[in-house]
Structures are given as C-alpha cells and as structure tokens.
Length: 177
Image (cartoon, rainbow, N blue to C red):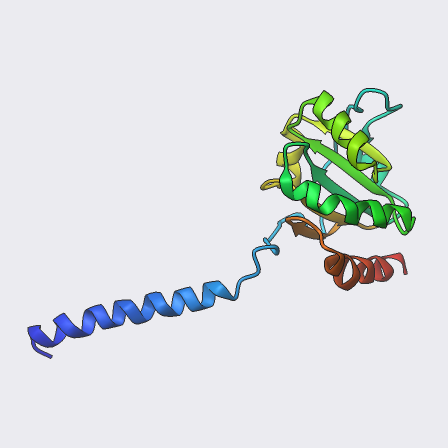
C-alpha cells in the first residue's frame, strides 16, 4: 500500500477501534464493580457508635446469620433515595441491616436518621479507615455477608426495589440453606 493509501486506512482503522471499544464499554454494568473481597472474610473492625446508641458496629456482629452491610452518609443524595428501600427491608425482618456511617458528621448523621428512620440493627461511625478495608469507592455501597462472616455480594450505588427482589433476597435465601 502506498503512502496515500495509509493516510486513508489509518484514520479509518483508529475510528473503527474506538467505535468497538465504546460499544463494548456501553455493555458494562457500572453497579457491578469487581471486588477482591468477594468470598473473603469481612475485614476485622470495631467502629464506635453514634451518640445515644449502646454500642457501635464490629466484625463480630457479622457471624451466625446472613446480614446486609450498607455504607451511607447524610450528605449523600443517592443514600437518601435508597433509604425507603432499606426501611422496608428492615420492617420485613428478613435479615439484619448494619450501617457504616461513612466520613460523616455525627450530628448530621443523627438528624438524618431521625428524619428518615433507622433501618439499621447497628451503626458504626467511620472516619474512612474501615471503608478503605472494605474497598469502598463511594457511598452508597451495600454488601451481603454470609453466616460465616464472608462477603458474598457487593452492590455499588443505591439499592432499588428491583435489586432487592431480583438479587439480594434470592441470594439471602441461598446463603441461609
């Protein structure tokens, strides 16, 4: 191919490669980020309680039953959107829901819980260190932990009723067997 042929073929090939990469990228589910913690024991931690609570939340709370761990913050708009879903799930008493209040001001977190309701069995206040151990990218993120304290599922972003019905509850049923 002469020089003039390459001047037409090369831009066309680059365009085709970019178009193919974009097409593949559109099919990636942004709520399913890989986590090296899947099937691993939950990190060891012991978080302090929010004011007025008897005790905080620790890794010891995650054994003996399947549980949901939800990271949230009062400043997080998507957390506010998913909160009614968590409240409804808590009212069903299907499984304990534990909260990690992530990089939040205590008074703001307490006001948020007072306003929106408290779906959490335990809440721990995290300055960000425990979030790093859990591999948190941002809030909200939700983890399903089995009876042995192993992380079995991670959901990035706000939970929807569809997520709970199609993914979380069927997985809970499998893990309880």
